[in-house]
Image (cartoon, rainbow, N blue to C red):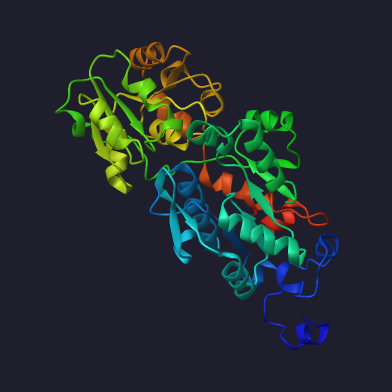
Length: 393
C-alpha cells in the first residue's frame, strides 16, 4: 500500500498490520512502520488463532471467548481462527480435540482479508503454527500465550520425554514479541526452562454468570457433595479424587476420553456429562467443596468459578491453586499433598461469603486490559494500545 493510496482513503483504518503491505519481509522493518488507529477510528482489529475452541469445554476456550466478548464490548473487532473453519481429524486418544488439516493457505487468506492491527497465537497446534508461519514469512509482529502443559500431557499419554516437549514449545514461542503467562509462578518456572520475553496475562471470572444461589440440585444426594468440573482425561488426575475415602457424594462434571473408563470403574460416583451456562452454574452452587486434583494445569479457571459461587476449593499445593488461593481467608479452601485432608479441611472451614469476596478479585475486564497492554511493540507503550482499544480507565 502506497502513501498515495493511504491519502486517497482517509476514512479507512490505518492499523499496524494494515500499513505494512505485502512486500515487507523483516520484523524490524514491520515494527518501525506502526501507525495505529485513533479512538475515533473505531478501536483495534485483533486476530486470535487457536486450536482450542467450541464445543470443547475447558479453561482455554472460556478464556478466549470471554476475552473476545469484552474486547468487542469496548468497540474492538476480534477474528477467531479456529478448527471450525477447517476440515479436521480427531487427535488420537483425545477425540474432543480436532487437528485442522492443511490450514496454511486459508489462515493466510483470513488474516489478509481481515487486515488486523495485532495477531495473537493462543495455541501451538496446526492453526497456531500456520499463523506463526504467516507472521514469520511476512515479518509481522505477533504475541503468543502459554495455556497448557503439552509437554506433561504428551508424556502422560504417549510417553514423549518431557524435555523434548518443552524444547518444541520453546522453539514455537521464541519468535513472538511476547509470550503471555497466567501467573508469576509459572513465569518463574518457564524462565528456568529457558523461555524468555514473558508478560503476565491473568485470568478472570464472570461474576454475573457465576454467583451463589440455589443449592437444591444436589439435595437428592448424601452430603457433603464434593464436585469436580473439567475434562475427563488422564492428565487431570481425576482418580486421585474419586479414590479418596470421603463422606457424602462425589459428582463429576465434564466429558473426555477417560469418561467411559471412569464410569465403569467407579459406579458410586455421579457423572453428569458436560454442563454449560446456567446449568454449569447450578452445579457449582449446589456443591459443598470443589476438588481440583490436577497437578499439570497452568491456572485452573474452574477454581475461581467455584469460589465465585461460594464454594471452597480443595487441591494439591501446585501452580494455579497456589496463586489463586495465595492470601485467601481460610474459609476459601485448603491445599495439601494429602488431598483427602485438603477436602475435609475445606469442608470444615467453608465460608461461602469469604469465597465470593475472594473471587471478586479476579476481574475479566482487568485481565482483558492486561492482554491489550501486552500487545505492545517497541515504540508504542501500554497506554497507546489501551487507548487504541478504547480501554483507558
